Length: 521
Image 1 (cartoon, rainbow, N blue to C red):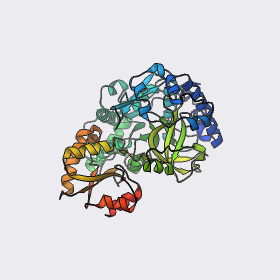
Image 2: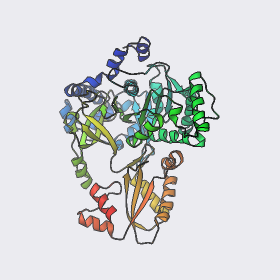
Image 3: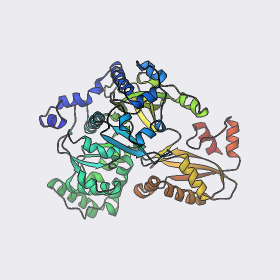
Image 4: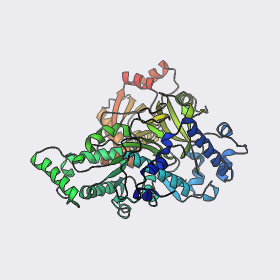
């Protein structure tokens, strides 16, 4: 197949749409045929690898049904020894890249995920599909072009987002702000600052980054540090924009917004809580962002389309299974319980599910619980004429609190902070809340001591910042304090447990009825 750059050069826009977005025309049975075919191919690759033989055991796995009945659900601990030691010879395919992410609450500080050449190519195709859609206003329409200036605000290598520009090198000619060579010398914060300064100077057509960071940078334009006085335009278009912006700020005394300086064709946003920040992004940049959903182990999972009212799964990146909420609850009540899964063609509108993936095309992860919760919001997207179930990303599973895509707070982090604080807290639970501006944690504590909320907050917040650098970055880079304290009277936790016949209350995100009961105390 021709590269995207060549099809763009030859103005073959219909062919581009079919090549990159043809999956949006699939019927549900066609989607499942692709899923099943690629899974059977992956099973054969796994059979020939030491990793696959370890997971399969001595069981004969020949069909999709065999696979789902006989192969257990897995987590990263099942792969840690092989992957953290980079045992390439044990894998179903030879890795070309080793992608890194943090392992909060794990036995090591990081996780590694192997990507073969084919997986890298598929990730590039997935990303380009979403990038095309970010510039789309209707079916068949898009504005992506070669030489578009791309303000790329994601984490550097060895994180997955840092590899994406390199995955795209052979596919399309984009001008990155900052350039890839310059970006490699900068940390995450500085590459965003430098990139935005260059975008003010030269203009920018595309943006990809963490939603919370985009909002923070956008809001800085109303402050003195967002001033344009030290930036000189690099072309006539930006000269005119900067002139108008300075007139608005200095003469009309009006608040300067990023939409006064930028005219993006497309904005791609990712990270937990993206849904919280979308309205702000639209107000600041005068363009509705397109949300994508993915992760290190899974790569691209799903993308919004031009109406921005639901995420559509990619059919050929992961084999998809779903743990229903009822099964999740059974496991929470009995940790030895083995939850069952359903397939994509069995999910129901309005229901909540934990996503389980098997990485296709030689990937290492098999029936892997990536820890993400999704909600099926509809069985089709009538507005966009998509006949596939539509989902919304909800959050991480209940034993983790993900804040703005920046950090994942575990019971270990909070428990360590409480111990280091030396506060006499007898029982506690942490609850994630959406908030009007930003997501936050309400830490509900029970104590026999006459502490004030301020005393508890000051000590625990400080220790959490010391323990978890990413939590500290929420304060430093996003500029807000995500911790709130709620003190309940002695005996409250035990009373709630008796009332609801519980042996324990989850330390992270207890179920809704328990949250309500604690808040009412």
